[in-house]
Amino acid sequence: MPAPFSQSEVESLVTSFLSSNNDYTDTQALITYILTELKPKTLDYKLIVSATLISNDTQAYNKHSLGFLWDEKNDGNYTVKQTVENGTIIVNVSYIKL
Image 1 (tube, rainbow, N blue to C red):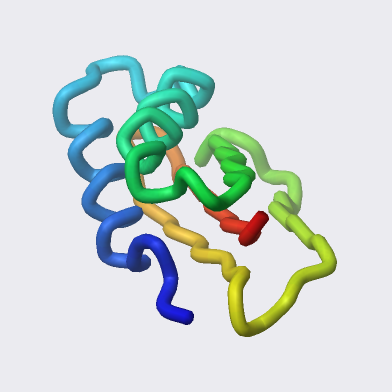
Image 2 (image 1 turned 135 degrees about the horizontal axis):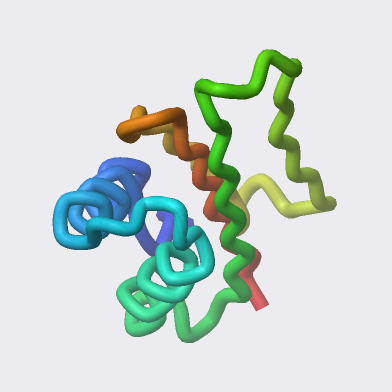
């Protein structure tokens, strides 16, 4: 079964949000935007979206992970990484067939 959306669609949503919103630190608004835009395509799916902002100012090692049990035929996961003014945003979108 094909995925309900593609990684390029997720990348496009992240880019669109970041280019139209001056406050790239509002990761909750980014998550809400992605969920709202993908909702019509995912009525038969559960979506899990996470976003992490990693500041260039921190010298610590940062890690972003997400895991779940899934059916490889129906479920999947995309990770998008984009550089912003003072750091990096990592967005993970997972879809799980109901």
